[in-house]
Amino acid sequence: IGRRTPKLVFYTGENFRPPIREVPLSLSFDHLPPSLSEWHMRLPIWVLDREVQTVLRMHGERLEGTSSGAATRTRRGFCAFVASNANVHDASIRTNFVQQLASSFCPVSCGGAVLNNTDGLVPDKVAFLRGFRFNVAFENASRSGYCTEKLLHAFA
Image (tube, rainbow, N blue to C red; front, side, top):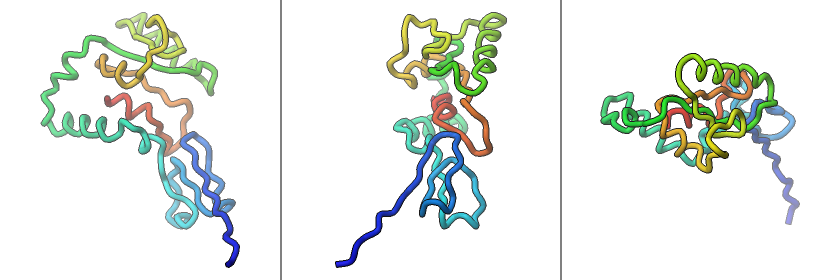
């Protein structure tokens, strides 16, 4: 019986470039040229989110005009913001945006650790967001193709 060599697979849902050709397969958010498809497959983290099918169905209905829209029109809150890390990259851009929006237009309900004004962290982010007409959803970093669950959750 021959020995089997383990196969290594690299996966990241974060803004980190995959180590192409260093491992047999890399899975990441990255849009890479087809010439690298032997070593890489695009698999953004939002595809693995448990809410993805429900949110895509709801959003599709809204786009096609087959949704009554009542669920969105009857949302009581104006705008939500859920963030947990105020120190990553240049988080001041998003916190300044939320503070300026709240001071010049309408209050923004902040259910995460950053700028929290909801008497504690929300236990279910998607359920919280469904109570608002708008959601401020900044990514922590920017790179072509990089998209996490934040955008998906904004469509909830």
